[in-house]
Image 1 (cartoon, helix red, strand yellow):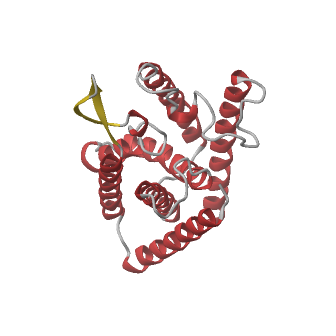
Image 2 (cartoon, helix red, strand yellow):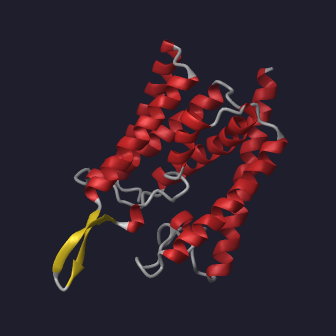
Length: 241
């Protein structure tokens, strides 16, 4: 974290985001085409992740087959967005449902993506294929969130904050269930980072005062980030008008 490699990855991500925003603006890429690109990005990301994280099922020292490492299932806040992208592209037709879903996706893509590249849980080595997948995927979801904000895909109101917090509660319960189901399969499953912090020795998100204090801090941080995002975006849009 914050090594030379990490700073290089942050610089690469920043440059690519700026480049993509410029190209999309010049080419006047529609939201539907942008969504298609993100769906393709998700499939490529999951294919790469599966390719490098298959583990053998051994019985009596004999390999009986391979499975994807459960730690790499798409159940973190950023990776679970893959299902939302697919839903928006192929299944969700109701405009109100689209507005609700995008209203939740945009802040979580932006905030979650930024936090992910600043807290790289897979490392920063340029020799590791998954590091490329990790940074480039999160770069793309940050870009998509900024693209949506720039084009005012969602006209944020305070009702979006209420909807977002409700959706987050449901997803947190989902993550808790997944973590519990996988507790006998992998050591300390940690989707949504409910079980423990994403990394050790973080300044705020740590277990120094116990798990309950950590969880309360996590919940408080989520509420503050959602509220701040809503307030700032609403203010910017008001000034534009």
